[in-house]
Image (cartoon, rainbow, N blue to C red):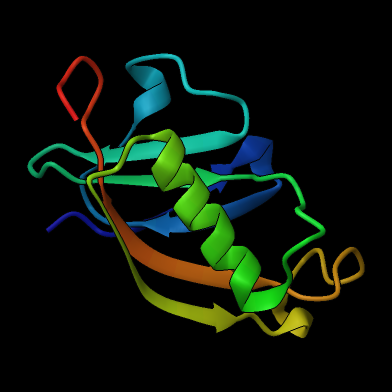
Length: 118
């Protein structure tokens, strides 16, 4: 089995550990500057890391959910399912001096791929 690997994101600003078989979609097609997109060569799954603009009207866990649901709406997702929302410890973040809180949301969205019906 191919080992996991650390992959630099957004020009090396931070990195993520990717599963075996992950392919950088930007090698296949254009990807917006605020996204890092990976797909798996054997499954129909994608991993998208997206930098989003601060929305002052929502904070904390509600902000994580807001952004996830907003992206699902823009992508015309058939299903949007939040699996977990957890705070990140600021002392573990490279950007700890720049933010008051950080959250990670794990979830699934059922979205049509490019040139397919939703």
